Length: 301
Image 1 (cartoon, rainbow, N blue to C red):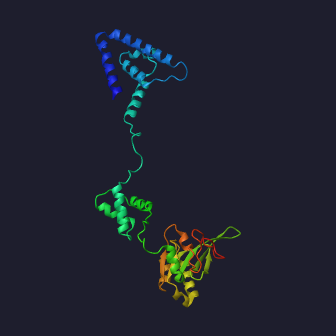
Image 2: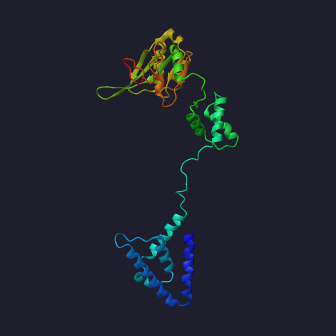
């Protein structure tokens, strides 16, 4: 603002001689340009010539008084340079990058306290259920923000905080769980085969029903029927079938086990380790250790 005001004042003062004596004003302007250019050169005898903000303002003010035909002789810069100075000045004036705060604004303390209070008073609510209450009150809040608040406070954002964990569920229901999974084997010639394995969690007994190079849904359904026939009466002791969300299973595959009154449970996406949790209730590995793979099967099975 101050630089702009000074520039306008200088332009008004220099325009007075132009009105009175046009020719004399042009000569004086040329002398002022040359004199100031000489001052700049003496100030920077070595290195690259640089003009400061005051120099640019002075040259821009005198440019109106010098005849365009004598610009190449008098002025040290071209008209394009003056326009470039003006563009950089405007961009600097309207640039708020240094004053702009990056990222999302921090959540208010009152909203954080409200979210934590709802979580403590309603232990079975999940983060999406809690998120709906502040939104009804008019607060602008995202579900992921609620999840982050609960996670930072050490509160599980999952809906079933008071229920059993996945490890506890597998341990308690080990005798009634059988898991299914595909794994691959590479032959000597480089061909890849896909066996379908079923693992009884209670006895750690492994059933490999078949091997194929091109697994399909119809083939998987036939292997499920073969397993039911192999188990015979022992299938009555099983209650759950665990499998991942592979597209090679399908509804017909689930229907084979549902006909035997087994409940099919699909694991969460990208959580293959859920089926690898050791469920032998007679001996638990220490926390953080990985279960030993059963002999004769892949670590993924």
